[in-house]
Amino acid sequence: MPGLGTDAFGSRCVQAQSPERGKGDRFLKCRAQFAQKARFHFFASRLIPMAAFCFLAAAGRAESETETKPDAPKTPPIVDSISVRPGDRWTYRWIDDITGETKSYQTYTLTEIKDGAFSVAITTNPVGSGQSLSGLYVYDENWGLLDDGVWTRKVGDPITGVRLPLKIGLKWETHFTASRKNPDRESTIDTTSVVTGYEEVSFRFGPSYDAFKIETNESIATVGGGPIATLQVVLWYAPAVNRYVKRVIESRINDRLQSRAVEMLTEYRRRHED
View 1 (cartoon, rainbow, N blue to C red):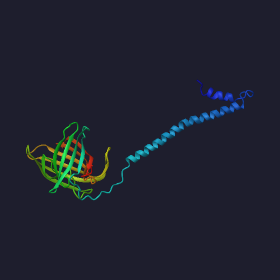
View 2: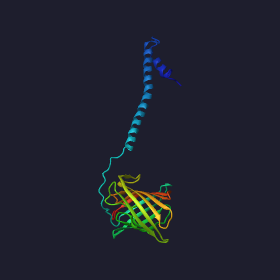
View 3: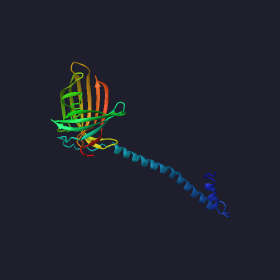
View 4: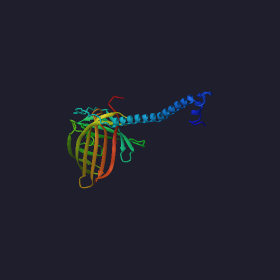
């Protein structure tokens, strides 16, 4: 196979030379021109990929900066009421944050507003099970949980609700008792809640929401003695859907991690929106 010094170089220059002049000026000129072209292609073959690499590297840095650049601070709206009506419903995906498994989907449907409280029908569809579970929850008008069918609370539990008017920096404490039957049990509960921010909450396969971030620490002591349970709850309340769009619940017994769950909104519908 011909190399650069034979056919690729020699044949063209041999054809260019004149029989009369032998290895004369034309051959030397041809050889010089070819050497110049060879040097050009040699450097071009290295400079072009290098330029492309530099361009891509610069583009990558710009993309990285765009992704990590913090958003401008958002201006929180004034939230002094929760505008819900019977027929509104919210569906959430429940994830075990320790195993990473989706455990269930739960739909909350507001059925009635009565005596300063929300009556909400809840339907739970466990993953991998063909049977759904249903129940009735009662919340105060701030979405604080009063009754979940097992425990009854004297005041709304703030791990599901807010405090109006809602604003960044708002802090409140709640002390109440919760009781249950079969078996009879009573617990005293102390909570501290703080509105720590207003930010965008994005979901991979869904819309984004601007939401107030509320952090709540709750201590639960069983009357008569028993282990101390604590809950650390972070929820993001979005005025656009009149409820939280995400909630992270961490449960500990005697300061030992028991569970960590994430609840994310997958669907929100208002009455007659179908």
